[in-house]
Image: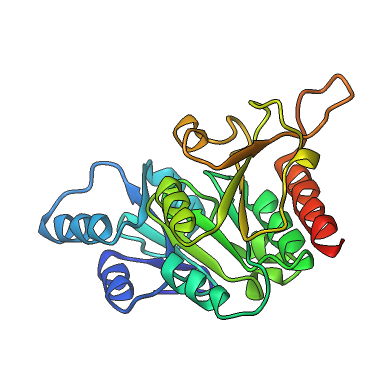
Length: 245
């Protein structure tokens, strides 16, 4: 069975995976067993699909259908590989600007960031396959439809994306308070990728170790941080400002 955002039932989801449906996440009832379920588990692991083991009550809240212990959420958009994204952007005559989101989890923040990315000419957004906010109806609504306009690529690990972009001649800039450099001290005029972290812990330490530059926003009040979508907007518009000079 299927509706606009869900597929449920083990065989239906297996068929969807084999048909290359853009599956964001699979919710699996705790304690499921059997040969078909083992085949199902193997398939989602092999395809790197984000999954979560949950109580049956969670599944019953997601659908009233016969879910057989598994529900998959499907994406309304097509995702790209990072190779496709960089190749497509490199063919343009503009200076590339990418956005990497490290474990951003809130779909409304994600939607707001996509909207700002579209308004500031971002060429593509890169997210991680596991742990990233999915593209849901709420994401689409918050993005004001921009999710259909900005290409989004999925990678196994954000650090791998950083290395790939660097090898492609693209500077990586981390938005973090763990630096002395201000966003206004960094050049965004060359091909670059801005990295934003998750709502609770920011950018992973392992990623901060390998980026080319780090920059922070000046905070003059008593609150120690901005909402990630707001902070992202400041970084992107600084890139726009510099590139317009």
